[in-house]
Amino acid sequence: MYKQMSDDPAYDIEFQENPTEYEIGRAEQDAFKLQPYESELLPVWGIKTLHEAGRAATDIYQKFEEYNQAREFVGMDMARKYLQMGWTRSLRYGKYPGGRKYESGEERGPQEWYDEENVTSHKCTGSILRR
Image (tube, rainbow, N blue to C red):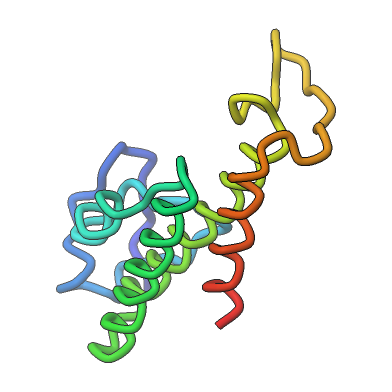
């Protein structure tokens, strides 16, 4: 039986030592809450420039492979979430000026590839996700 996760900013559970306490969440849920993975993945995650996005995607995929070799499912799932976040964020920055989907509380329509560098970042991260 899994323990119910709370809405606290961080969990008291050390998931590397207690992987059965982990509940698979939807999409990018809990990516900034689970230790030690947040401390290992967040510092290398970035999408502001094409170079940063490419390096981040490669480094996070490397961590995914390390977690896989160590048979650490929770780490693999967290690395997948960071890759997914890079992909979705770069797409948003590519379509919306400043990455802002909402303006004055209203959703604004996307522009056709507002920022070409972020579109390329999106494609770069996407190629890692398709591996």
